[in-house]
View: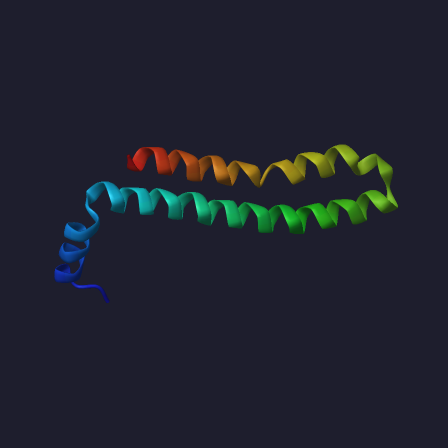
Length: 82
């Protein structure tokens, strides 16, 4: 657990702007990693499905793009932290 004294010391050392920048970086990093992992899983499944039936290309393409919206949400959160 982090106590109030530790947070106060960190705020004094880094400053409010630094802590906001760290929070924004964590928001972008976390969503970027999650999106990449999800896109890898969906993309490999879509390639396997298209290998069996080429008519599934459109559905596979749409499903592969959907995880990228996670990064957009992370960007919005990072901008709201300002």
